[in-house]
Length: 127
Image (tube, rainbow, N blue to C red; front, side, top):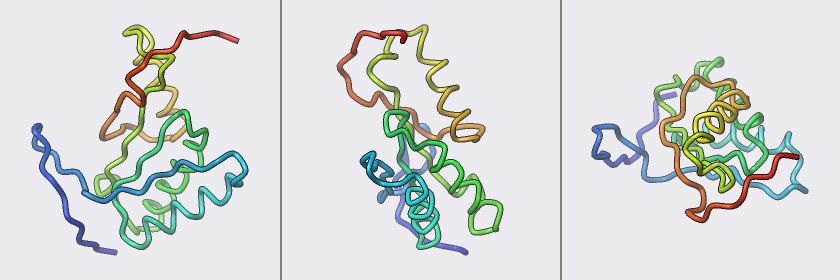
């Protein structure tokens, strides 16, 4: 499915779709619904998908993206995927492992944009 969406050029030369689909859902929303709604968003033309480790649904969002790649709706390079670093992982030595954790949950090879979720660091507590 070929879709046209308006994009803006970033300073590194990449393009980001101006309209993104946010995947945050309250805990009451079944994870299965996150999966289905994200697949539907891709089917109707969304190419910027926004998620975060803090949303606790990266597995379902990644599954939706991989499903739409597998069925030929999109290629990975058609999707601009944004994730976010949570506030307990701002220390430089924690950033890479936080990103790797997200990639493992998503079962994707890369994210297109990795942001600081909230620019206020919180103390990391290992439980």
